[in-house]
Image (cartoon, rainbow, N blue to C red):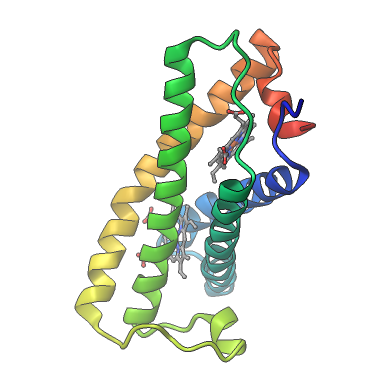
Length: 176
Ligand code: HEM
Ligand code: HEM
């Protein structure tokens, strides 16, 4: 019986995790005042365009998950922990979407370039409306605290399973 995530689900998880774990410090650093212009531009370029890739990968992930639901957790995991894990995962999916969509709206409605979609000739899905861009910026800013807290909780729980409990939960996402 399959006890772990499929190779595709694992690849998508680790690619998105790596990109997001790079985007958060990039996002925090790029908004600092007094940075050299070249560094700030490079961080913005990475942050905006990697964020669009994350949005696409998250949609692929959800479709894949719907077609290939992960197997249940081992019976050794208490009911309340299984519920907490499920809730954390749902919130992670939701918040990464909120971050990616609010980032997109912030940039496009703000009238700023979005190099990847512009280069591919994709339409900008919103007109330039400065007030909308500013509202999206506020959402992006507020939600980033929740994302950081949830990711910290998530990594803490994963390491607890991998190092302390050694109950195979970490391996479900690592080896499948
Ligand atoms: C995918 C998940 C994303 C995460 C986790 C994320 C995270 C962050 C973080 C932590 C900051 C710094 C907040 C601060 O301290 O002020 C930030 C700022 C920013 N992000 Fe993102 N971001 C994401 C997606 C995107 C996308 C897709 C775009 C644009 C296409 C984008 C555009 C921006 C911009 C322009 C800022 C500068 C602040 C502002 O103008 O509102 N982000 N982001
Ligand atoms: C070092 C970093 C990370 C580790 C060690 C890790 C570990 C894991 C493990 C072991 C699972 C499987 C849990 C289970 O079987 O119930 C999992 C699932 C998940 N992780 Fe992570 N993770 C990390 C980073 C991240 C990041 C940065 C994100 C968000 C962008 C994330 C989002 C998720 C989601 C949404 C799930 C649920 C997958 C699903 O059921 O579809 N993870 N992670």
